[in-house]
Image (tube, rainbow, N blue to C red; front, side, top):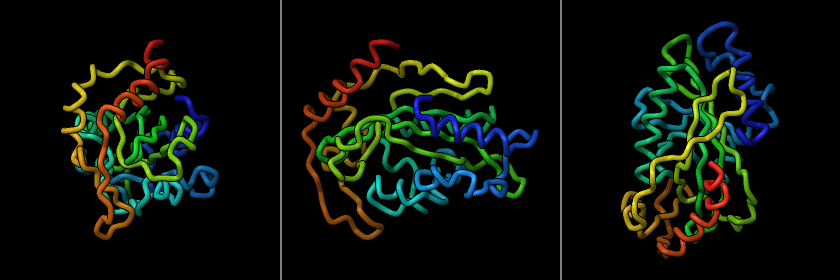
Length: 227
């Protein structure tokens, strides 16, 4: 984990377990995570293939340019990443451990930032651990977004967070598909619909695939070389 708030959230999740496998949603005290609250969310993952936002902080909603509550968590991820995330959610529910995700978020006009997302399994009213306490933080210069919302994300790496490994080492993901396949896998490509509200989208934005991919791999080049 890179962002200090990621460590704080995982530490808070661990403390409120009180000896149980996972904490319950009713154990979460918003005052205890007040500083991070605008970027925190809760997912309903009873169906890991179609997780939905139960709650989402205002800062996170602004980052994606829309009200997230009630929407699909995978809607902002390209296709291959969405498949991987469904599997990761199932794994976290089975192992009862948080997951740390590293991703690249891109605006419709190719402004890019690196993101870190924590997903920690929780129960609700003592039931199965079918929900997640989550948080997404921007790791790189947010000015790269130019004030525009993130249109989609691509998963770069993931790691189960273990208590005896407080600072996990990310492993390289499978080789990326060919450039045009990346765009075909993403439901919005090559014409991305930028949703700014729950009403009908008002703008259709055209991607320049080569430029988008060039900037993505330029951003990743230095860090991936050290993995």
